Image (cartoon, rainbow, N blue to C red; front, side, top):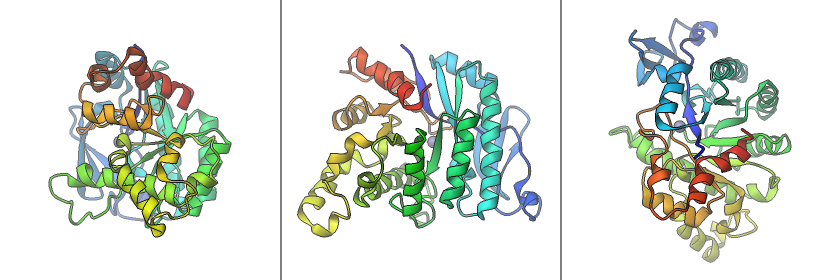
Length: 334
Ligand SMILES: [Zn+2]
């Protein structure tokens, strides 16, 4: 069975000190950098703060290919990590950062024996610059673009974000939406609740705002857009959203139809780590709207890549193949 992982992340082994570049102290401010321990392990730093331990699979294509072979993954689409988005920075700095990591992603893919593909990142705080960069990236070989699910206080129904999405629709560029900069950070700072609670809530908020903001009514139906982590809390709480839309006019927003009408306008990845949840997603979204994603090589990713789809009971072989590879192959053109 073919296997294509659409949700995996990379870091280059090292990169220019962006704090110094933009006039700050060495490794100052909140620009990310890697502090290597020398044994294939490194600490991702944000200025002086330790952010996350990572290992060589992030930057070494050989390690990545070996682990893919171990778990039977044929192709992987790599994307930057949200800490690199820089949406809160001046546009010129965010563009510089995006180009740096977009070019680095292609270098890793070039050593990937045809098995690695990259999504780009863009300075989404400025729609025009983001459109230019995503077009440059497509020309250079990126197979899609990963965006954060909000730009500061702007949700996915923001007109500048919609302008960017429409550009992607017109240029046939696949979009992957990743949660980041999570809500209620003061109340979720313990126990990694920012990741386990904040991220799913962020993704639900994004899909709801895109629907109720009239986003899907305005955007071309050619847009290929996928949300991470099984859409977060969205599918399980769709009934609540639908009920509100039907019975309270203020809950309808600008959407022309009830929320369930738009389920064929977007995709979700399968990073839900639970067979019951996967079966529920297939029932709600349909087997054509889900794509295998792991969050490799981070500790919160699927440890044995592909096992959830391969072992969840009650799926036909044809369904498993769609989820594991075919849907992604047509979505990203890989
Ligand atoms: Zn991720």
